[in-house]
Image 1 (cartoon, rainbow, N blue to C red):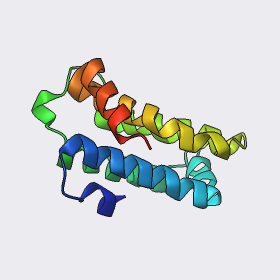
Image 2 (cartoon, rainbow, N blue to C red):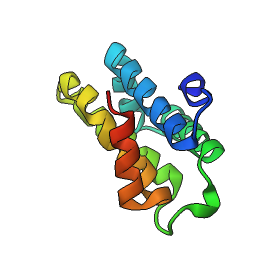
Image 3 (spheres, one colour):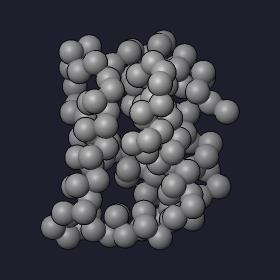
Length: 126
């Protein structure tokens, strides 16, 4: 994901590339995602590290000063991880690829507002 985020382009495209890379990784490695989600119920050190790292990747790219008030990047990432994890848990891996543009929209929304976030979600969709 970090490599995908680092590709030279505008920051929304970098974030979209990271989301696509992350979802593609989960599709190829669903058992790892199940492990992450199981850790959520324990003391959550692995889960918390993942959330913190992904939030950090967003904060490295996105203009934090432009973020609309509301939830934190950690809460945003946790909702994405939860949504992806739910798809893995119920055996809907086939839907994860289709979910990627919506995850881009969800991630960019607090920074860009709906119209621009939707535009980037559409631009980065395959």
